[in-house]
Amino acid sequence: MSEIAELKLAGQTIELPVVIGTENEKGVDVSNLRAKTGYITLDNGYMNTGACTSAITFIDGEKGILRYRGIPIEVLAERSTFLEVAYLLIEGKLPTQAELDYFTNRVRRHTMIHEDIKRFYDGFPRDAHPMAILASVVSSLSTFYQHDDQRSEDEQFSLNAVRLLAKLPTIAAYAYKKSIGQPLMYPQNHMSYCENFLHMMFSTPAEHYEVDPVMTETLNLLLILHADHEQNCSTSTVRMVSSSKASLFAAITAGICALWGPRHGGANEEVIDMLTQMRNEGGGVKKYIDMAKDKNSNFKLMGFGHRVYKNFDPRAKIIKAACDKLLARMKISDPLLDIAKELEEAALKDPYFVERKLYPNVDFYSGIIYKAMGIPTVAFTVMFALGRLPGWIAHSKEYSKEPGNKINRPRQIYIGEPQSEYVSVDKRK
Ligand code: SDX
Image 1: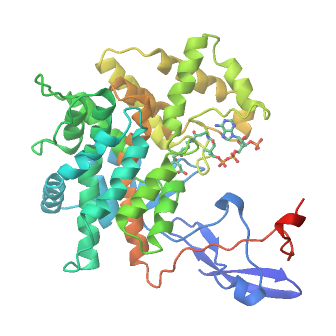
Image 2: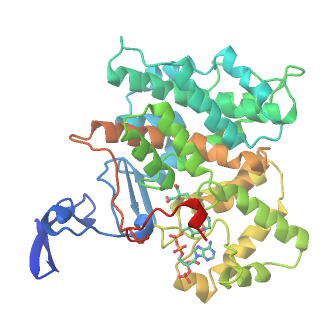
């Protein structure tokens, strides 16, 4: 059943169509608003604005629902693999065994990076932030894999998507090895995707290294949980850059940079720093809860709150359970996990958090798992990027397939100076 919105404006009433989604989400389509009225809409931070329609991921923030191509995240977390989820997101359906085998082997064949790219790492400072290295090296891929006119746009996109999925773990692992002064470890293509990454991160030429299957299983889970999240800041950035018809490498580089911010993917690194500070101070969590509530403190409880989830982030629930399981299986007891649980319990009882519906998000517990796996805190956001890559690719592809797609170019309301004179420098105050 179609709906129409009526808008009374400047003495006229105009009708605007309402778009209704699969799960009954409703959006007023204002595509013709300016043409009809001369007015635009204004929505700081896009709190109420849909940038597009999309068939990739569905989130219900009130109910704490997350589905990739209609499949609940809890089911995928339990039964799928990261490469299968990547295929699901990018191609829009679960692969047959033959399709999955072909996709897996295709990715496997692209895990090495050009030997000239390896030399970039000699130039980075040892303490370079790995997100800066990731963005730099991914951006450079377009110089090694220049557009090949022999291939159709679809073939080019598909090959570059496989190159990115295959090479991001190698690029990330090499950044870690560079930071600790160990030799870069080549990928071993007989290994699974997650096993190969852990091999490149933690093996050395000096001794035999067996990847712990518990770590492989846990990494597979974490990457699945991070794989997509509809129009989050970094994915919207990827769609924005894709809309100018820049290359997939350029769009993914932009997504990496947007994810880096502490309000977004950078939060997982900040959570561990916050919990470590609480542990070192030893004064309990109340001081931090009070600081988070104090508008003058500028302090935010990192890993808490979400633009969409006004209930538990379903990913946080799964990661919290995986935390307990992994630490128990690895016989690790991490005081930061105890502090995190104490903080969560205290915050969820506090009216400030309850009224604002601030719950733990995906970043609250993930860092504790990465830490248990031996991944340095500074590389936690890189892990987020590894997971989010298929989502970014899927959205870039969806955008490019959108019939009549336009370059994303928002409007604004100008609030600066009225027309002014050019004052010569000798007369300026
Ligand atoms: C991710 O979009 C996505 O889907 C992102 C993501 C993904 O998968 O891509 O889910 C991944 O980025 C998760 C979020 C990680 N960031 C953090 O954990 C940083 C801490 N969280 C906050 O910065 C904040 O909650 C945001 C940025 C996540 C959301 O901010 P919003 O939606 O703009 O909400 P807001 O800042 O307007 O907050 C509403 C109120 C404010 O108080 P009042 O002005 O109403 O009094 O809640 C308060 C805020 O001050 N608030 C917090 C808080 N988060 C919000 N107060 C204390 N601690 C917090 N963490």
